[in-house]
Length: 48
Image (cartoon, rainbow, N blue to C red):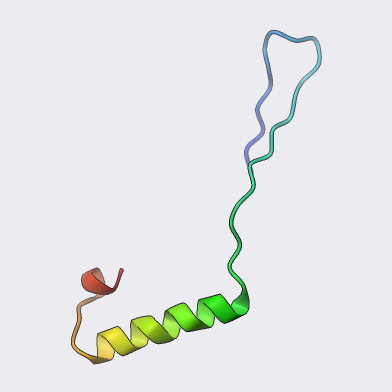
């Protein structure tokens, strides 16, 4: 989370940046895909 204060104002302004969240299903799908790629002989660098 990022919090920024605007120096030119009397009040502090908060800015919260949203982060993309992956669902558990998306995480499992990515792990399965990576596992299959590693099983087929690709290196970790190629899977990234």
